[in-house]
Length: 252
Image 1 (spheres, helix red, strand yellow):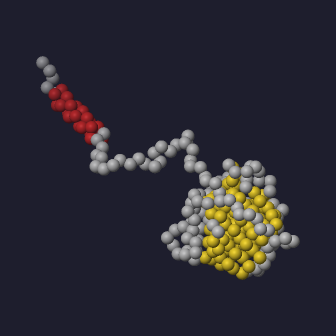
Image 2 (spheres, rainbow, N blue to C red):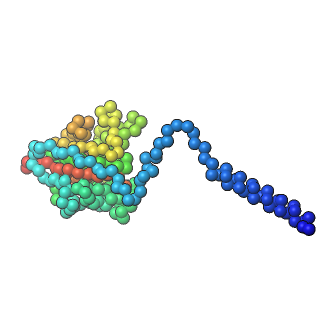
Image 3 (cartoon, rainbow, N blue to C red):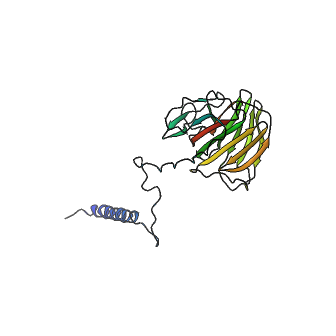
């Protein structure tokens, strides 16, 4: 004969087991709405799959003045370049391009980074480069730089605001001042992952800026007459550069 006290205990245990089984069954049930299943674009991305390659940069047109400097980074050497003390950053030559590598510690940072041609004094002439932004942060060119300051052309990402996306600035010991800018109708900004061919034509106080062959700014400013020239970027690993060239008016 069985013990009547055991019956309630056994019954309770059986009820608990049934509840657990029902809960497990419900947790494995997934309701899928009708319609086409679309795979996530990142579903197959992993560390072993290479990311899309960067397309070739736009080719330079034929030179029209004395060639003071040129680099397509095909040799993988940066011997002809130097950083600027006020905005050093880290730069590397990789895959035939100049790559921004963060700040001096190799970390992404929200600070300026300049990389300029060594032993070149830019006065009157043309500075050109193809720039490939990837992070969405500002990129551009810098020229006529000294310890007193420099000019820089700053390109910004395309967005819904009406703020100018290309600005000519002068950096002084007192801060940054705008010299001129172009309305969004003239240039709407860059898309990340697309090359931008940028040029500065400086003749005395006259400064002309073109993007992808179209003039976007014509300005006049005589603050700086000569100095180093090169690339401007944020130190956030978010830009690549190719086909840098400096042409100078003969004798200057």
